[in-house]
Picture 1 (cartoon, rainbow, N blue to C red):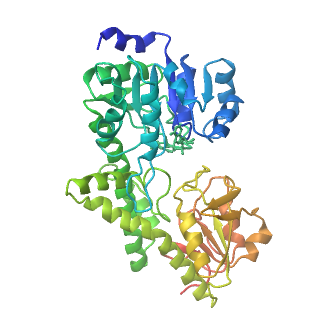
Picture 2 (picture 1 turned 180 degrees about the vertical axis):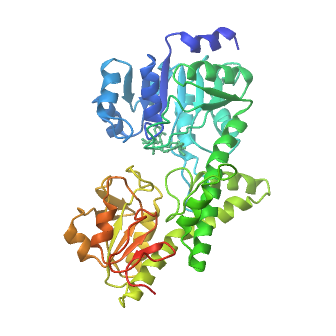
Picture 3 (picture 1 turned 45 degrees about the vertical axis):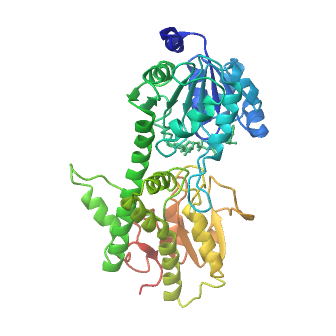
Length: 444
Ligand SMILES: NC(=O)c1ccc[n+]([C@@H]2O[C@H](COP(=O)([O-])OP(=O)(O)OC[C@H]3O[C@@H](n4cnc5c(N)ncnc54)[C@H](O)[C@@H]3O)[C@@H](O)[C@H]2O)c1
């Protein structure tokens, strides 16, 4: 393909399309618009497109003002009309990549987006897949789909994979300053991708293939899943040894080299870490290879909600109370602190387990007023002294910064803390128990 086609992505007046305006796509669209590029966002949900065009944000990391500024400047527009993909010179695909009920990759959203792009594909366009997926997806799924148009990759259009590294709630590492890995199907594809993305990312990290870029993303998330699995196992070990795991981790973290701190908790959540490693496991099963670290980490991490529930049982038992009929307050239902995302949150498992045992479960989360899953709806409670003293157990599942955990510790009769949010607090009725988890209540 001619080098002018690559060059024009560097500074020409190009239009950039973003398919899927969620946690990943919307910040990408806004960042491109900030650099002066005209951006057309695509979503299947009419409400999402209408909200953006009306200057309102449905993503916690972006304010209405940030969206409104770009919309008013004529740089950002959203639509559900996929035929308008033909207007775009560069197109990034940021659609969901969940797991199916059998925990296999569900790439149906990638298929749907690819089909939409194929219908609009014209020579000279650049397509970048951003959705996290197994190595090979870009070349084996997206490329053949796009080539049904009769156009050829590297000759007529460019195709890259560039993994998103969004960390919701992170104020330091945002879209622009987080280094961006990108790999093309051909060398020219990679160059075109770097040319466009250099306009709104500070640091580009080109790699030699789409597979390298795809595996980079899964390595990053598997690294976290495995290390969290390791520290969760240490937590289970410490519990049996009656040692406070958080004390041990803090002590280990004073080592100035060769140790990286990870903390235990109620289990994994979010759209990435509990999901992405399974994309790699699935791919490797097709190559007759078993991903052992991923499998062990997943086993340990997915058992943590049951461990926390077991601690609630244990605490109630010490108080001579059954779980059935107990009033249990869950503090924090988002999957991590200071955000409103409940996808794959371990809080949902803990609530289901406790309700299955006959408990009356209530929740408080300043970021999540209402929780809905598989037809069930829970409405969040206001955190009052009356509420805290009326429950049998308060369980800290997610330690949001704007929740007064000292007050929780003071008022609730029994506290199970899965995040060490009550560190340093001592129950006036007795010394702080060893071993973490059941931090207030009758001792064994
Ligand atoms: N959320 C994160 O923190 C994060 C971080 C890194 C990578 N990722 C990856 O990025 C991808 C997107 O995740 P997300 O969190 O932004 O998802 P999301 O659910 O927040 O947003 C996806 C959007 O795509 C829209 N959509 C679905 N199918 C579509 C289609 N065919 N055409 C147009 N729009 C469509 C949905 O309506 C939704 O608005 C996933 O592969 C995910 O694994 C997510």
